[in-house]
Length: 561
Image (cartoon, rainbow, N blue to C red; front, side, top):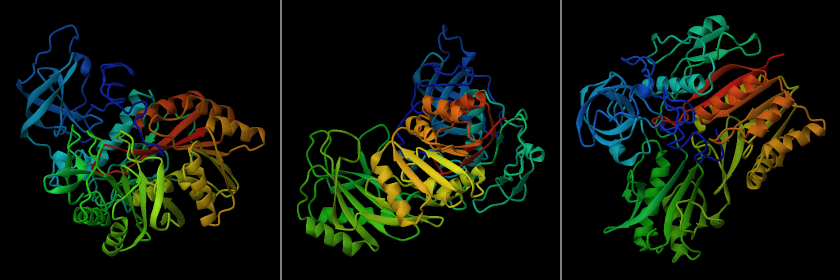
């Protein structure tokens, strides 16, 4: 899970790998695009987009209404199917469905179509509870049962490992037991895996990693069931809401799909209720004070965004007003209104952003009232969260993710650990409680300042932090005699730097724990490490963002001596 979540390699359209199209081909839509049917769907995997000769005329044309048999999902959550043998992406369709759709765009090997009618629905279809689901675009999978989402996300990981990494995945059988949605890995029998129920509501294969002998790895990578949430709603602790103007005054909500038009919103079902309430209150205060929102066309207006941060464990609230200028008219009334309306508010800040950009924050942040941080905890580690600092948005699943990383690290208290891409020290401080010493490295100086502060906040003395590129700092540590037994990497979406991978292979730690927010770049990097002498033992997907297409993973690599 990354500190910097911008689009990287494999994140954007056009970087593509499609089934039947080689990695890096421009025909693709997104790196590792999953167009095979999800496990448990009614239709088998396709033989690939390449079924149509690119020199021939497509058998469908724009504005034509066609019947489409849906066999899979793309990484953007679109249904993928065929009409007259031609591949079409249909937003809102699910695997196993037959739909009527209108062709909107045709390319050489594939096209896009608008869903008109579901003729044969999938058993995995459900009614999206959000009234603005189709307009918003923030969630992509609310129309799919949560159990099916978890299966799909695991399949997305498997597809990336096999198609991009060319890695062998251990055999997998889908079956249901008494707990709806459980998926049990058939390979578990061979690797001493005990499948149990867990708090997240899906079967977790708990591997006794300290006792396993992974041998040569020829049996394949164990990809466990996705660890989901018991209650997959209202999980986000941070809201970033754009503001605009309508005839009725100030509005705040979301950008309508495919536009920069802001649609007013009262509630978001994946935001914590406190965030929704704070945004509502700030909106009403702004309207009463006659505040005008920023207009990106003219560059005029004051209020650009309202950012709310909420501590799940502490109940503390931070409100950040992102403004197009230094001066806030009637600022004292703003402050008093927010303090009166928002229980638990501990910090009110202003961030100034006068640039003509869609980047939310500018370079200057000041405290208008209260503290410059709020606090929250993950497990028993306390963190100070500032207006600009990164902090995971789903604290419940963050504890699950970090718990899995800690399990894979298999620490006894005698190990030296390096945490590359350490950010504000979230994983580092988790590991430090179980290791002899942990070294964290991060290229962002402000993040390292936060990491050191969080270390002091928790009284942790066996953690050392350094600013710089991991691929430069880690070799310097090695020259100082610091040799890691375990290395944890948690890179951004673009994956690990190639030089860092070379550094890891030269250092040869006993274990590498790879935390990833992008299965495509994870698969690419695992291939490099496997070729360099590591066994990719197992991967556990974690659903950090229910009802979206995103999936996080934790992978365990063991040195092959």
